Image (cartoon, rainbow, N blue to C red):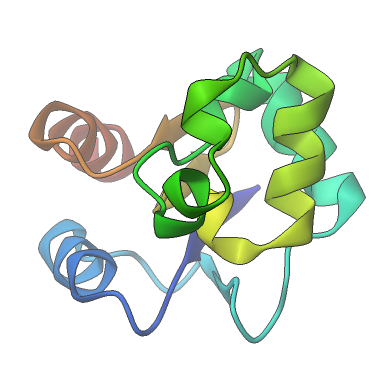
Amino acid sequence: MKKIYYLSTCDTCTRIMKEIELPSAFIQQDIKTDPLTEEQLDELYNLSGSYEALFNKRARLYRERGLNNEPLEEDKYAELILEHYTFLKRPVIVNNDQIFIGNSKKTVEAAKEAIHN
């Protein structure tokens, strides 16, 4: 599977998608208009090994709800990601059996190399 989960209103996602120059074989899913399903989240979990790795701790709702002040279990991370799109760290790029999560320079470079080599 070749897919990217992103947010079209996110300038960082847009910049990264341009920078990587995603081939047309990639399916693009805007998680705001086409929310992540439980099955898709399970696929991402199987590739990443952790719901926490997929969770965006920089989301405004994370602080507003005081979630940053309480310990969260893996199942709670999954529940929150399915509840609201902002809890998914983005972009999430799936290139066959590889997953690249987030927007760090190192992650973006690794994704770019894996996609084009």
